Amino acid sequence: MSERRARPAAKNAFRKSVWRRALIPPSAPPQTPAPAAGPPASETSEPPSIVQASLYRDGVRVSSPATLADTFRELREQPSGMAWIGLARPPESELLSLAEEFDLHPLAVEDAMEAHQRPKLERYGDTLFVVLRAARYLDAPEEVDFGELHVFVGPDFVITVRHGAAPDLSAVRHRMEKSPELLKLGPEAVLYAILDAVVDGYLPVVAGVQNDIDEIETEVFRGDPEVSRRIYELSREMVEFQRATRPLVGMLHALMAGFAKYGTDEELQRYLRDVADHVTHTSERVDSFRQALSDILTVNATLVTQQQNAEMRALAEAGFEQNEEIKKISSWAAILFAPTLVGTIYGMNFRHMPELGWSFGYPFAIGLMGVVCASLYVIFKRRDWL
Image 1 (cartoon, rainbow, N blue to C red):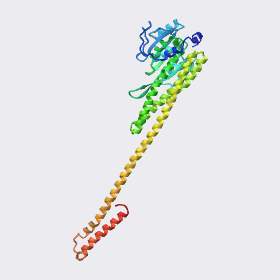
Image 2: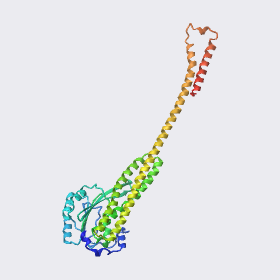
Image 3: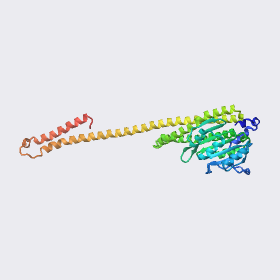
Image 4: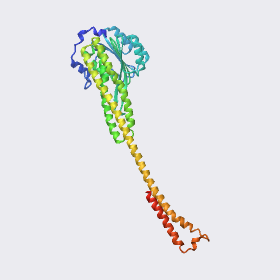
């Protein structure tokens, strides 16, 4: 980076409109013929780990070496040039080769090998090591997919190590090559463009998550039984999203302080502050999403509890009604059992039964039946069984 600081004449060599054109994707594929060195290859569709390696001088691509060895050789032959090497899930041998050639710190190389790192910014001498967590929203499964990007930024090189599908660095490279005034500022400008692409990639994710939360709110009040699982899964994604965005705020402020310390172009610092503002806004939105999901989960638990209470109340009422019916049936069964008992006793046909020869025996038996039934009826009625 010291090599770039030795060129103060290049600081204000471009206008703000050039920066804006560099950051806005073209509306249609370019119709102009590609440079002699060949068009930039896609950084998301190539199967090899070396997605693309290109050399630039004064913001213009001069060659695209096919191997790392050719890249190293041509860069040594062009001391005023800059190498931009893109890798996707590289093997250990390639990273060790890059570490030896560009004097990368072993700790940074180890992090790039293992991946699954938190977003961070570290300086090792003249080399910056940046870890970013990119995100993209998948419409079909309605979920957020996270990728990891490691960036080594040195005085005359930029190395990107991508773990995951996001972000699409081929678009970043293409926009940079369409604006040589921006690209000739060197590795710091490339780092800024990568940061801007990662942060811009958060916007569709924020929009998709907001739509999911709106749908979840509707499902909660509709009583969808699967909504609790969806809330939990989205909450976990927001935890990951928060881990990706929250550290970026401090990282960008530290990077801006470093740019100011090392005399990086003032316009580049302004646009870096704009990226920091976007990250802060995104981080605040993610925090609000987590709070909203927490509130929705509480409301859903309350509604589920209310529904369960209503079901228990309905079961209790049904049991109470059933119990009342059983009381009525039992009461009438007891009342009807009394005359049956009297009639059964006098129907035993024993020879010596005092009442059989009694002229008032029959009226007495009928009266006894009536008295017993009436007494039972009064008793059950007073106890509200009838």
